[in-house]
Length: 244
Ligand code: IPE
Ligand code: IPE
Ligand code: MG
Image (cartoon, rainbow, N blue to C red; front, side):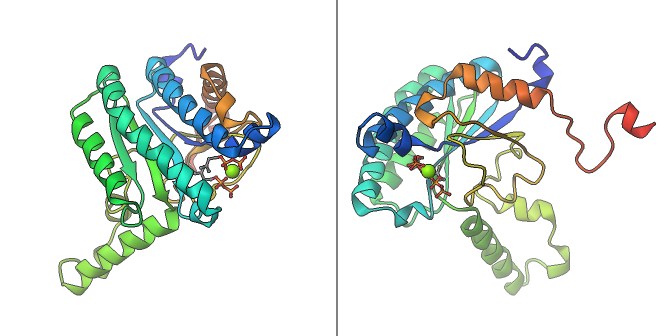
């Protein structure tokens, strides 16, 4: 348990990895791992809220995940569709505001409709803000932002020399979110895989060998304890002994 509430990360982002390996180790198909992974997301959402985390962002499907076999992509889309639909009731009960980041035109119409419905229904909830990254790639997100700003420059609305970091951040899908304080990746991999490249400039990283379907409140607490012990400096000097 993190004793000092001020040391609880405000925004936790998670690269949920290892569903396939977890299932394989049990002699089960990969999709079984994805199904258990979706359940783990539901549980961790409530745990995060109870622990005082304000923003939780999870990487559910990357722009590169289309490269997986068609059967797996279809199964993941089916699962996402179900997840989005079943989330409305649970989010209303738990006072969770749900948002989706990522490029939507490649998603089917019914998934787009389910996203809009979930976002609209939960928009006034004041508890935790839960963001799901679907067909999300950070480079794609930055590219879309650059195109938008370039368009405004071409229209004469913005001058190139007036472009600021804030303007770029406001044109990203994550415009409504503070930068993540803590990024967790499960199942032993230590890479970003195109997740929140801009936003993670000063994020603390935490890796665990636990596969995503086994990640529970105890593991989240461990990650938050590790975070609470970090000395975030943002390029400056934080501790008195550093400055002495
Ligand atoms: C994470 O689990 C979920 C998604 C990327 C959709 P994986 O499917 O990547 O599981 P591994 O890494 O193959 O074990
Ligand atoms: C990252 O996991 C994407 C998601 C968790 C949605 P991957 O399993 O796709 O990443 P790589 O291929 O190991 O880098
Ligand atoms: Mg993986």
